[in-house]
Amino acid sequence: MSVSNALFEPIEFRDPLRTRQRAVVKEVDQRAAWRNEMTEPFHLLTVDVEDWPQSTLNHSLPIGHRVVANTRALLELMNDANVYATFFVLGKVAEKHPTLACEIAAAGHELGTHGYSHESIEAIPKARFREELRRSVDLLRQQTGQPVIGHRAADFSISRHSLHLLECLSDEGIIYDSSIFPIYHPRYGIPGAPREPHLVRCMSKSMVVEFPPATLKLRRLAVPVAGGGYLRWFPYWVTKLALKKIQGEGSLATCYMHPYELDTAEREHLPYPVPFTLRWTQFANRRSVKSKLIRLLKEFRFITMEQACGLLACKLRVALDLGKQPIAYGNAT
Ligand SMILES: [Zn+2]
Image (tube, rainbow, N blue to C red; front, top):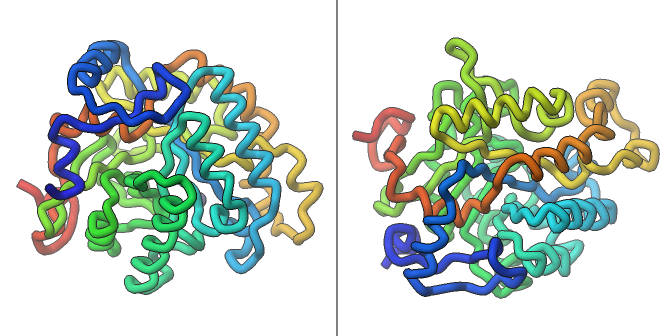
């Protein structure tokens, strides 16, 4: 049985809504009971665990210590709200702080990989992408003793030119991915890609579930609404309205954030000079994030991506077929 086929059979799933332990539950009856509970709309909360200077300022900088305190602060907020999320941990962070992934898993959350170095997939050769992916997956697996089935590329950097790399994810046992932003952006995105979760059929015939970050459609334009800088810049009512609108479309919102976005003191303690543009785009409005997040966690229901795969996979359509040329959205029939 291929790894991805497990999505379509009686699955093993983690049930943090019922227990603080990450016990793997096999009973199909329990899965059905859990499915029945999900009568109200749900969304996905994801966290990219990285250290701001290394991930954004300069990839050759060492991983600092603030990521640990910031991640713990986020875990506390989620614990208070009884919400469980999917954490994509950067390999370099896991290497520098080898107990952090275990802390996240022990708190009941789900772990995925955010790659190893945080260099854009567009900027590195395929062989290095594959090597870094394997290295990051192995690290998390060794540290936690759990399979790693989720992936998010650094800076959502899978573009229309690198879609073929999704095959590498399947080869490494990845079942779900959240790297394709269906927007126009100078650094990332595939405008026109599906806004809702969908399936990618690999050449091996395995499926990868793709969860695009949340967007709203304004006329013909998809606009990002629930993550990172967008969560920081927009007033809370915009985020709330966006999630309600996405619910109204019968879909779900994949929200994302970084632990450093809670760190209001980071800029004054940075030992590195920061260009003016980054100062504005990366540090503005961090003070607003905690209160917005608390409201978000209170007012909406969130589940993890693995849970969403169990609930949704058989309902999703195949939107991309890596076995067909040209590899492009819309080529699957
Ligand atoms: Zn990142």
